Image (cartoon, rainbow, N blue to C red):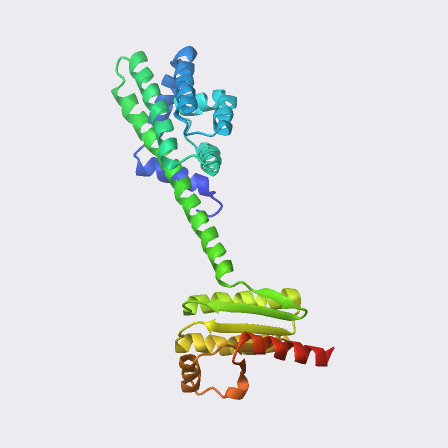
Length: 288
């Protein structure tokens, strides 16, 4: 529905997915309020003690839990499920996971607390079966919120790792005034070629370099798609006012370029990185 927040959508989804009705939530909230505070607090303290002795939780997470004791007891014992609850406890889980708490440890924490509260529902209600079943549904939702945050954290971490790898695989460096160098090593596919081109153009834009040396002496073979990317890179650099020099072309790569039917005068090439650097410095000096 337009205008509905992600947490409102999740609230509707969870109630439907776990067959948790409004009447069940109301019954849980009423029953939760009737449990003596001292008994609820004892369950909470037991969990805190376990957190402290298990060595699974950084001190900051234990301190944060103690600071928010009243809020936690109210929210979890009375099953105050709502869009606001999901938003609040999603953030709590994000903070715990960011602090280094593992999914397994956090799951154990929630299960311990939920099981303790379930026993109190049974103790203080003669016909507690419906309450226990409803609270189990709430427990599953609470664990699902944790699982969702964990999946999202793993996705973010993977994206950051991929970005770091992309940066490592495209180490553009300024080796002389107005001269950039990117030495390539290993296997080059179309995806990496695209990343290389983006890194090259970004660095050119930032530095306003006049020469860009692309050394491919460490690359054994490229396919026609990658060879095309090399040509596109030289042309894109030229449009930005930068001359691109490709050094270290092997016989097999030269053959691929020739088979593409590309006129050799479209590409500035040298046999080695050293020759490319000499050429760039010489031409740069002429333009000073």
